[in-house]
Image (cartoon, rainbow, N blue to C red):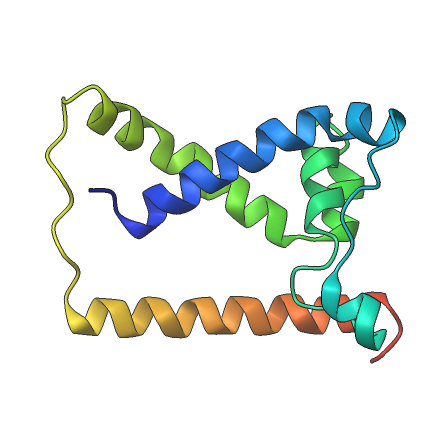
Length: 130
């Protein structure tokens, strides 16, 4: 059993792996990924630019990542912060996580909603909607 931050860490590690080979895939004819909401409506989603930002981060292009999706930095920080705990759990050196209280889950959900809303405002501004 893993905690929500550890699940995000595993997803972030996977995204970093994909981000490191993504340019190679697209150079060899893979069509890449596009945002379904933006493709259908022209309106960017809160996560638009996350693939580009992840590729930029994995290749050391910090300014490109920041200007494309600052959310990538938040995920990267979470990956760095929780990777040691995840590694310890995988090695059997750390106990399984305790369930969060209802209050902690509600607070976390609210923080996530605010972060997603801020990301969406950033993307809407970036694409000229605001």
